Length: 334
Image (cartoon, rainbow, N blue to C red; front, top):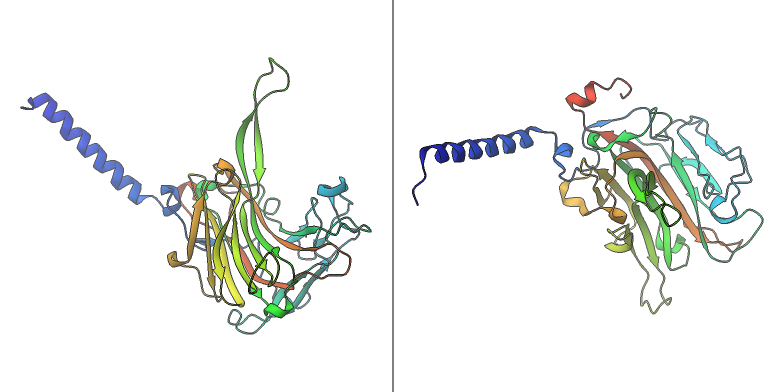
């Protein structure tokens, strides 16, 4: 078939425009292209996060702690670190032990301090549920940064977590530690009543990665083992990630890209994350994230009044973003 000159011109213009779009996309920062961003890429935000190096680091618990998720009791005032970078979660309360400790062996070079998180009474204060419960320890990002970060800034979080020897783990099958984000999106919910107008609302959700323990002899397990469990898939369900084959230090990270997708990474040791440490990319609950609010840790145990959780130690937990021209024109951000 012969192409007439006018049509030929249109074809050439279309192809040129397509190449220009490709070149323009490649010129964008990685996070703005919607590709997975390795957590820790870009610049660290100095206003939030912690390395726990200050020898006078302290946490003020202000007990009894909150348990709003169980009995609608926030129990103010809430616990807070003296440096103002961490606070008690109003939904579940803080771990019973929040204390700076000496950095375990083979930690980050030069690190002398890290943070121990451990809990015993993880449910309602003064009441024993004999069920798995959890406490939260939350980084103050939203307030210290003057609001949530839009995801076109490609926010990411990296933390180091020390997994103790297996004989120190709580002997219980199930989740024992969580590393999570607080993200927001816009959802449309049906109105109340037959002729009600649907309501457009902001929704906060909490994707993340858990360390799950399978205790020998429980559920037919032949040996003790642990694995990551990812929260979550497009329907909101958790699914199993890589098996954990060694204790000691691990580096965990999550990033959020401009398309609202969450990307999960993990590697043994304290070295920076790389593309090889990628686990999965997901739209948890089918949501596309619009803003990053903060990150936090979960510590879980059987709330029987006597059993301590696994002693978790975290270090150098920080938030990063990718600077762009658009970012540079936003004076409220560092």
